[in-house]
Length: 602
Image (cartoon, rainbow, N blue to C red; front, side, top):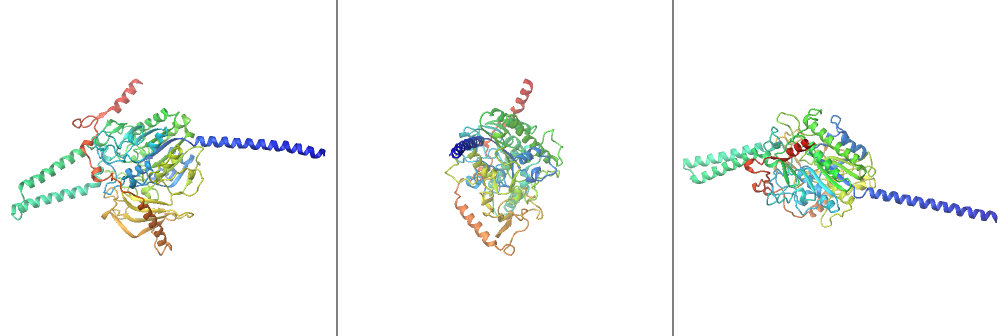
């Protein structure tokens, strides 16, 4: 009896100790879970976007001659996406997709015309106000939001100060940068992108007009056909006025289109490249400093490495790849400054940092002196303006210490459209229910909760034309890609369209394929050898699945106004922003004046 009693007493005490220990472990587990969920909710978000940077330009993607230690640090301490895809191989549509999480064809930001991007500050097209950007939704959640650098999604609609397409109309509290883009024409001595791409067309047009007018005058004097002198006079007058307007516009392009804004005010017209990256970086650092106690969204959209190339004195001549390499290394320095201020402010563990490029490197960029001004796309074919992998496979680096895996590589198809649902969910906002969102939340993939991308299909558009489709079947390593047409390279044995400066999407600029070209990127990432029914037994079965997906995708599209129509693209004098007046050549430099005041006051 005594032994039974003693055993029961000790078992009771043991059970109580065990229960207490179990209870303690449960409490600790819940506390850790609460801490983890708290750190993973409402984080700061920093989105870094390069312009025309090749995936092969970075050390973390295999480059051994350019020095990018700060960008490489993102890869070392975070996640590297090895199959990160831009929604378009051109700036304007890619950036529209990035901000909205939707294919640009859905918002009217994909062109049916030859020109696929905005070129003038006084164009009337732009990202429609009906589109919902992640900046709008994060601002509604109490985030401070800023865009610093390049916008390239329009500015005004009907008057020069309605700012309907301006960043401040799309959810950003603060803007410092360019509303259009950096072009060769913006920097004296760098040539003209317009002459480079349209020289042959302009010469041919002038020749046709000249021959036509001379022919009309000749047949009139011979007497074969009577052409009223008044009509000929009007023709000459119209042509002369048109030429004068064109000459005036292109002569003054720098003043009319290349300017720096702070919010709605032009502060430097034309833009000065002196210490420009330092100024952009300083603005970014100051924005972070103003928001250390509240959640913020910072989009730092670099002008590097779009031409015109530039670099400050500290970086000029320091790289092994000329001015292009200098620009890449200066941008890397800027990334380092952002990471440093996060550490000093003890914000690193509370901040998601993302780095990418809007599309692949512009391989046709060669200066008038023959220096290569375009980047390197690694093993991948083609470049900017093309849906070969070199045009759309871009860097994808994400850093968030303690929340996402460190040093991990994910070789699954992801898209720059995925940023939208990812940051929306992290901020605790709701995804829009009244429209299709084509991006998917990256967090389950980044945290290892799933191993396969949610993108079974990705649709690759060349402007508004469906050019290619990528299919990653469930439970398969294969990644199939079909092309319905491909650009005609010139010269034929080259890797780009050097005669026209970029490749175009229709007519004689492309070759159509029936049946479509088929590649398996898991075996042939360089897209060297198209598969055939003889080399791939499931050739027609694969095409059938992809064509069915195309049919379903096409049915999901709805007609929207074309923001890149010729009417919306062309320069409209009444929309021209000018910080002084046209008679004063639209000149001002409040930026330099402010910097001088800071120096004197300091």
